[in-house]
Amino acid sequence: MNKKYDALKLNNQLCFPLYVCSKEIVRMYKPFLDEIDLTYTQYITMMVFWEHKEMNVKELGKLLFLDSGTLTPVLKKLEQKGYITRKRAESDERVLNVAITAEGEKLKEKAVEIPAKLGSCIRLEDNEAMELYRILGKLMNSIPTM
Amino acid sequence: MNKKYDALKLNNQLCFPLYVCSKEIVRMYKPFLDEIDLTYTQYITMMVFWEHKEMNVKELGKLLFLDSGTLTPVLKKLEQKGYITRKRAESDERVLNVAITAEGEKLKEKAVEIPAKLGSCIRLEDNEAMELYRILGKLMNSIPTM
DNA sequence: CCCTATTATATCGCGTCCAATTAAATTTAC
DNA sequence: GTAAATTTAATTGGACGCGATATAATAGGG
Image (cartoon, rainbow over all chains, first blue to last red; front, side, top):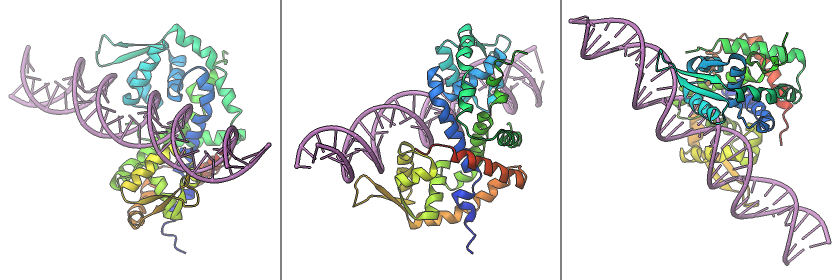
């Protein structure tokens, strides 16, 4: 039998396919994101601002499940590209408010085609995609938000 | 209605929860992997050698969905720790054969507890975990292996 | 054989992640 | 009411991972 080590086999891991699929799909985005000169992280950050206009780093991090150590360089890069502005809150100097610019809004027009382009790369039945979405949602909710 | 941009909302993305879950679960591994002083990438690499003893970089990359740009430093690190050996194939000097050492085998004993420890962190019904595993498998298979 | 194409790995630069640090605001103790 | 301790927010710095390119070895075509 010798099942003692079975749990250490790659094929028996749940995390591993998750890790691979995540990386591979991010990679699929790359050619499309290259066209608008964004990384995936920059892209999901812009998504938040396309939807919300303004937000501080803390709130942003909560939405994106990213800490400020990741966000600070991302936001500086996006500021440099002219898509957002970064400004300390007057009421609380610790807080950095980030807001989208007109340039940033314009980028949305270019980005709008991306989800469909990517969708056509992924071979998954609609019901499976929904099930995957549902289970991942449940998994995400079980993560301590710290 | 204004549904034109709905596909750009974070909540409507399939990739985003995948990306988040992957990162968060890798993070969950960290305290356990710290105990045996491995990164997640080093861990899945060792998994392959716990199962297969010997393999060249190309084959390893195919199994792990990682390229030599990632694997070279990982393998050098693991060699440095004494868990594997790296040796050019005599028949073809381009090929680098990697093999596990006795030290590497010993590490397996310490690692054997990790999958269970992690499993207990993840709140997911068995049938959901299996369904997730199945769908991710399908998704992985649709990835061009290049 | 020689030249070109292909294959396998290594190198390098950038982006992201984590831990430690800095700076600001709030709470607590006296 | 003020000083010290705690908490909170963001930044910095170092390590790791990834993509693009370089290097070296082999294979293939004439």
